[in-house]
Image: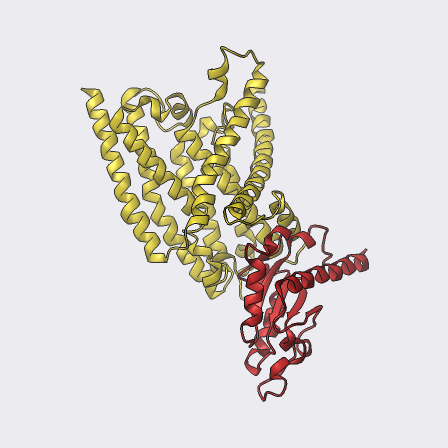
Length: 145
Length: 341
């Protein structure tokens, strides 16, 4: 895996994957981008293609339909990368934990670095999750030295 | 012989400096643009140096080549795109500093060169073998064909006026444009025409650097960044740089055609500066003009409106702007006719 350089933390481009969530978390992610929270001041940008992304924001409990797609999204993100799960659904299945259609949670399918609990988590919590992702990147830098 | 070598050295060193300037200032401009856009939306926005960080980050990322891409074309396109964009800068004067290759080409050449970065992007898009990129490449071609006519009309109308004043001058050379600023040589009708042409140039610039509302080719919410959908890492960084330089190129072209004024001739009665000081002052003034042009051609429009649909873009350029360009051409023609009598 290529070593992330020191500019990596300050220019984290995120790609947002909805794996069957109720849209609550997605709206909170958008709220983090609005002028009130304005994550762009930390260099965080929402991009339209996983190839451009550094971080994958995954919401939802992963329904059967989304398994292959989630794996492909993960593989399409170029290294170095982090995966951030937003919301209780992706962590434990949440309110959908008994559903016949549930294959997740997310960490059964792809490796996850940061969990942001909440139903839905507040934008502050999402920003905090991204800060936690920086810790992983710092660790990567340490390992590759 | 010695002078030939000297010219060659001049060109090589100059190219290096212009590349450095284009990239640095382009990225800085992108940062200023993002900051201003953020302020216009009541946000704080990223620091001005953010684009530099983005580029350095992209350079450390993995560069993926998709399995069904044509890999040599796919990898070549970003390089050609950046190189051709920088090449255009060599033909454009910076303030009172003459262009390095100014004697080898004029505005007509610049018009042709302007299509090469877009063509490189189209090639890269088709070569990446993704349906999104293919759609993006087709849209980029549509866009390119749409703004070509208004852009050409602008240059031709102004060249026409200059040619009636001084038939012996090289009409389309940017130095001639600098010698006879548009607003000084026109009559009242011509000034109206030139103002329309300036507006057209501004809107063509927005399309040329594919920013909202003309960013149909890389509409990220619609076709997932279009042309660049498969690009990552170093290749994406090169496209990012090319975009930054292209902004400088288009703004420089507007400044060179419409606002070729310099500070030093105006101030020479009050100030005595060494020639180096004059060059610096003109250069800084030129940077200021660039920022103003970029603000109105890019930031202001980008923040104010949403994206057009493909057919709306075509209607805008082929319909309204072409019509406006022809009206301006007629106005300038009338101006020439009246002036001639």
